[in-house]
Length: 105
Image 1 (cartoon, rainbow, N blue to C red):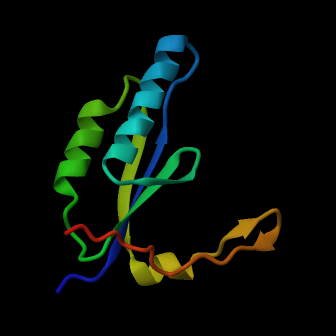
Image 2 (cartoon, rainbow, N blue to C red):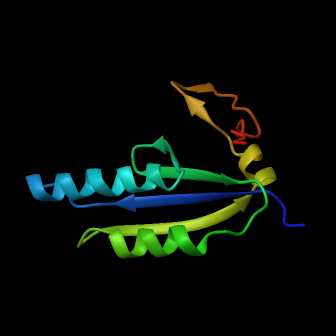
């Protein structure tokens, strides 16, 4: 059985012109539609409870990246994610180790 993983997408997109800002917004909305959540302004993550399953999201990300945009997509284990140090306003921040999963019947 595959172990739980986190997929992390980090990106820089050009936003100097109005069309570029619109494309950047569309890219962020695409990530949300793919099930990612925003961790920071240009960092989105998605929890993969059984690992794998990245081919389709990566294809969508690659084909919808605005011109001049840069993106990195990588995975880390749930354990590595849980061990990350998090600070907010100089104070340690504690997050749940796994997100709640929505079950649809």
